[in-house]
Image 1: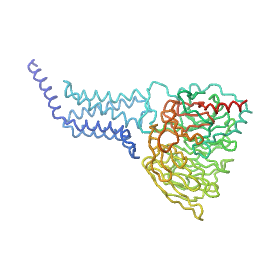
Image 2: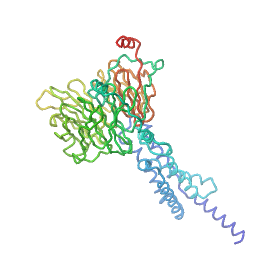
Image 3: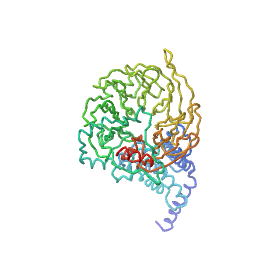
Image 4: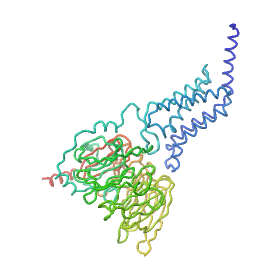
Length: 599
């Protein structure tokens, strides 16, 4: 071939590339990329995010990526050869990357990050080809490779409360892996007499303390944490899980995941050292919340009751962790494990231990004999619930309140008879505790987008009835429990702390972006302690007229959804990676009284 022919061929190829870029209709793909990026952060633009918005975050980037692929295949106005080459490049590079991804990245991350980044890189490559003297296909596929390859360097660690993805460098060991390497450390040899004496001093019996109201009794805490900051007493690595603590004297109990075992663990409250551990071979792999137990142990009449995320109900000896009895609820009831696991912290009333097992049917709430685990009664209550049974004392008797996707049910704890029901369907999950107000009222917090409702229970008539007082969307908690204090409700409206009037449901104030954390009421101090999702403890004044932040202190690292526990001035906190105990500063007058009493 002559030089003139070669030059003519090169000019023809250059003209074809130029013509292809002129005819390429790129703006739909660029628009889809922008929409995909915005959809992944859409919650940042809403103060009152509706419940369906998480669907946009989870599936918006994926949908835009699929539409971009459709655009390239059918509507890009490129040649058939270029479209086929581009498709081969996308499918080929994507398939190769999928083979080498960390196993934790399969699932939500592929939909929300891997595929969207690969398609974004492809579109960016096409866009750059308008100005660079290179083949559009080569640039597009190169961009696709770079976009897909980003996911190779990370592992997935669940999601934050706003449904944004948590990633960590792939080569760094997980907190759980580091814990397992040090698992053979010596146990704390606390003498038996001290353990027995501790069990006579149950100060925090289980989930959210006495009556599950999230209320702590303290002694004049100092709120100037700049001059007198909290003092860290101990800090330990802990297995994944969203359990809180039960506390008795020098013993604290929690649940956690260690490898393929769900564990009930007893620690020394003074040092954080492990005293005993009970293991059951079970592991829940939840792509949103992560692995580990969700429920909190319950101390009752010298025994410890726990429910694992896969439905193993245990009664243990709190002195040494020995099994007294064990029930596998899925086997007992023919149930499957709920999407986000069994979450109900066992409720002990009289001779019964009561739990909720999520699924449609006639067996939803279970009453087992506390002494031997024998199934005494079952009751139907909603299709699913991630709340815990809650004790009520309306009239002259006790009841069990169950909040489900269908509404509220009050049951007789002795036989499971449904005393009264209130229908308030919610399309999402309910993972919140009801709140007792006075002698006849109850608050039902619901979940994202639905709001909160105040009910009045008529306990004076032969047949109980329920009357709705108000329903408001001024307080839409997700899984962050509420506090009742002096005619007001305090809690998270999505991720912003809020106060509303109990009489009317009207908002008093909304301020304080603490993520989706948990709170604790200190009524003697007129204070609220908020443990933020990022592990920062914030102290607020219980002032219905204004949001007043008195102190703050960073206490934990990582995503923190677990409820804090306060006994005296000792604060016990944990998340899915670490646990810590802080000594909170006391006012000078309280310190003097303490010294006098100790002498």
